[in-house]
Image (cartoon, rainbow, N blue to C red; front, side, top):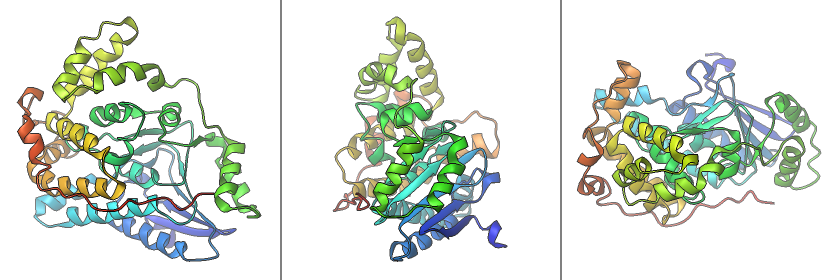
Length: 364
């Protein structure tokens, strides 16, 4: 494998470490090899006095990262080995490490940022998107739950917005990402080259975090018009604060306000296409996540992972949507009404939250 064929590229220019996800044909889906390369390079740069800041980006026109390489995890479970468990353990450790990274880390996102891609960027000290970004945690669509720290960063969005995004698995555009706090700044896709030119000529005469923030603020904006979630916030809070997913669905189905009726009808259709079990567990996980520190959230997600391939819907979801591509998953159970509270709570039995809270240190 040549240097340019490596799945993660590393380069240093003007005291900035540049890390580039380099599997564009696979939408930069994260593999265990990529996790290890990222961890190794970030750890090395953390203690290198010549590195003032890090930029994380991706090659390709379609995606920063469309998630984890779920096919390889499916194959691992089918073989009966533990590669899928190792992947989650090391991926979550990397994502948690990024939340506490000791140097400014700018995540530059263009195109799809889904699932595992969100795990890589939500702990970054500067989360910069372009107008072409599509962000989300779509796991419930394949019978899974929003992991990679989703129980932490989704549960801390305003009101019930994180519940809505996690339980539906829907994606948002740049204006919504800025509005809800999943991104900090937006620069135009056409300005990425200018951002790089400025990085290459930074004098580093002030704190690196402040220097990066000033640069991004000069090139971009932290607010965009047209946020759909802003317009829907009141309705989302009403419906997604219900005690369980059947009650959420019933509340949506009863929506009569003209300005929200079409959205509510479409949202019901979305819920009816998702794994009932995954939605139920996701709702419980997000509500527990609100009360847990970051380390506790990752520990909770690992606790669920260790059961989910055998007891959850992910194997059927991947079969239907990725392997056979018949797009008709046979969820178990097949309906929301058949998901008992005991079944949901069973996944959380025996969980003991980790002690301690990761914190960012890259602040000006």
